[in-house]
Image (cartoon, rainbow, N blue to C red):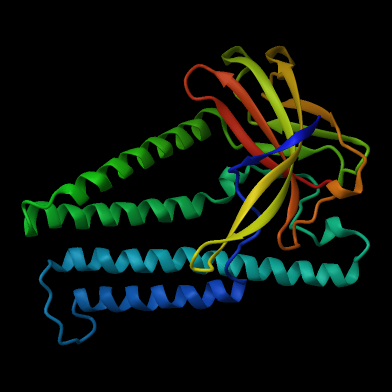
Length: 298
């Protein structure tokens, strides 16, 4: 159904508001350089006339936080740069076939969007653990009466641990979430025919809800003129499936009609981007199973 009143969702955007791939790489070098210097000084590998009031292990952790942050940004920058060059090459060759250069599509299918950023989540968690160790030293060793930062960081660390436990236990229990494209690409005015794999066993599921959404990105600026990319949902189609429709191989075939309007054409390489995303949600005991996948509709 077409949404009569646009709703705003907080899903993951495609575009990066503030930096080009080269900008990512250059920005990462600042953190990598700073982290390397701090780690080198903490272990005496770099001679510097600096007095350290904290143990060398704590100083090294502080340096590691800078280094990991820089490494995370560097990985994103290199990945984006390689993808951009490859897609630009394809665009020059196949301009009239945007599905070949608009995004790094695989004709067979795609992984869940939550799995695409797992490296970033691991690096982020490592940074949180480093900050937790530093606040522990401040609160219980250096300044015994200043424990609030440690308690605040402990709260965030527990939340992240709970999230990691949920993510890892789901991966161990159900395997890798993957969406198979039964056609490539999908055309406006036709049907989206896909197969979800790696689902929970049918006897643990109450029902299944599949939702196809079309998003338009929009750019906003804050008082400091910093750009932010947000999403506006302008189209949604939802179908419910019975658990009996999940196969013994824990897969589900879903067919949903696609509107025949040119304004809903995918454009992931533009800025801001417009794209289609399909979500599957299985209602089960405990944490619900929910995954998101991009779909090539042109």
